[in-house]
Length: 304
Image (cartoon, rainbow, N blue to C red; front, top):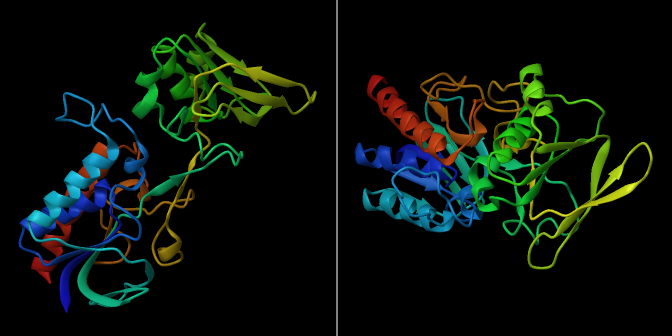
């Protein structure tokens, strides 16, 4: 069977692409190895997705996106993609169950936040540990929180959370920040932010929710307990690009480089969402990427 579009990844970018492809009467297949939603499905409550006056659960939004895409004819299968043959005019997507042929491929495998690697981290994810201050900061109004990191994202998060929270600890493993000077100037002037220098997280404490975090000074060996209700990890993310390693043009950080039309360095192959080199990684920007990728794929098919 020949598909017009095969989408790899079932996050908001992938399902947005599927919706637009299917509504354009393109034969569309979406392949997701786990469950709908990607990182979005790990968010208990979302307040910043347009159109929902009341907060919506990430899983619920993912299910709605999937059902909407299916309504217009998208075929959705749960299989793991193991290989992509992209260079020929007809693309081949190989999974653990077989292979599928198509005219265009849209890559939406997303990214995974880098974790601290502490024993209790997975158990407390969504119950005090977050990887997105913009998404979850409002749940910690008037509370004390900690941010782990020292780059642009961490410092931006510190300034952002200081407008919501009682106190913000910025825990950084070095004695100077890596963020741009402008951001550093802002955080140094912020009386609600305390920078904990030369320190790394040692343990996260709490059974059902975060109660505190122990940080160890790398120079002195001293351990300090920070009593916080929330911990925001901002030490970067890893794009899920194992399938296309050495096949497409990538940024130095390992993200896929595209044009504004989501076209990659191979004709007929598009990328959208968190896997793409871009300024902001949010559900709303992922959905926008997916719509553009589907539109561009339709135009590509029409030209060829």
